[in-house]
Image 1 (cartoon, rainbow, N blue to C red):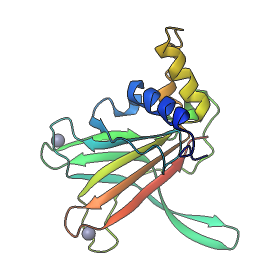
Image 2 (spheres, rainbow, N blue to C red; image 1 turned 180 degrees about the horizontal axis):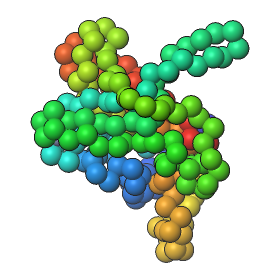
Image 3 (cartoon, helix red, strand yellow; image 1 turned 90 degrees about the vertical axis):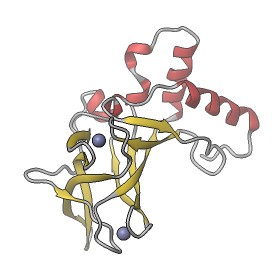
Image 4 (cartoon, rainbow, N blue to C red; image 1 turned 90 degrees about the horizontal axis):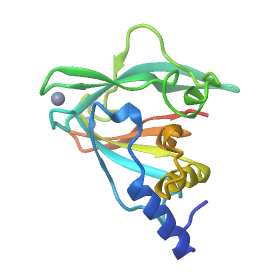
Length: 191
Ligand SMILES: [Zn+2]
Ligand SMILES: [Zn+2]
């Protein structure tokens, strides 16, 4: 549901968004919340720009490029475990794994989303094949999760439930560092 028509609701989501902690899977990275997309984006989205802990923001994404069958159509999807590699400091860190992160994993429901195994591959730009991107992460939280975060803010001690980790979808948008192309690198459901 878009909230563009309701100023008080927009105000509420803006407030909670400004207070909510970043998801635990981002703790080894530097992130900055990208404000403030309330009206044209969904109410429960929180968006971060991603940098390595060393400060570099030209990064590579490692994951699993697999085929998925939808009825009679086969499409290629890029799935987790997702790692981020930084050439500047030569570190590779786990960004997201469907078995560990997001709504179903947090609540022990078991993951229904496709997940890769074995060697991972570099995500490459569809236009120029470069593997270096500036990345933006979007986490989709439900309005119930926002309410939990708001209760935290009121001192009702639901902090242990880590509402920021109960995201339903994570998507990674990249801007290619070589040709400037913007693309959705992957979008993974977690519930
Ligand atoms: Zn680095
Ligand atoms: Zn490119």
